[in-house]
Length: 332
Image (cartoon, rainbow, N blue to C red; front, side, top):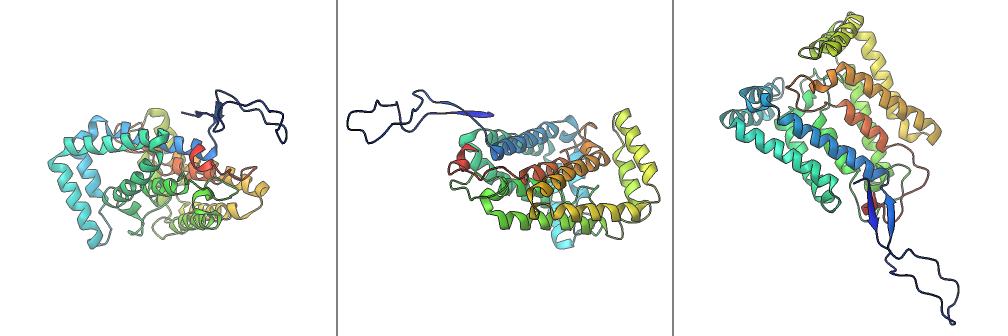
């Protein structure tokens, strides 16, 4: 899956005859292994995240009414017009919880396998955008961004919308555009940079919301994520919450400043950009610890949360030494 066998389009090499205009380059008769490029590797990581989502969706807790209650809870604080469909979907899931959860898990399994299987990558990525946006609304309540209480540790702007964004940026276009990083080859460098700026500037905004910067808001979020975790992870979360207690404004300001610096990363020269993007990966790792690894070890988590997707996005913007080739859309 990490590599593909490519047969030369030129066929078997021919010996140069007396009338040949010049030397003929040697062509492998049987083809050879060509390693997957940066964009293909990122697609495979995204496929792995969808497969992890499917595995988590197959947990026994998801086949109970707890799953429907989880969906219903995402409606809280959203405008009534947008919250009603969330309630309807939760009611429908509650009436047919086993069948509904099996369908959801099956869809996510199909998306992961489809993205990983090269002939189906384009179709699966397109389907993942539609599915992710539906989940973002009906399952995540838009990541809480309309409630005024969503913060980076809470997973804002929502894992599902980040999956949709990654699918768009990693789209295997037949004619890749020249770009200094993988995320710009499908939509263009300018559009990719604008999307990156919008995402990280919004994270800075979420970090500074009044509810998030309250003295004990972030510490309460971190300690809440420790519930149901293995002992070592719960102890780490409780220790972090104790250190953050009473420093909500300071932590929010530091997070917002870090997000603002990260937002400028793709606009800077490569040597500066690499350092900032590496910092973004490290920042995502810290946030993931605060998120309790998304609850994937609790038996009731449905996804690894937003932090791993933020790290994957940072890698998608990592400066590349050379622009994409004409065949990058399918080869990578």
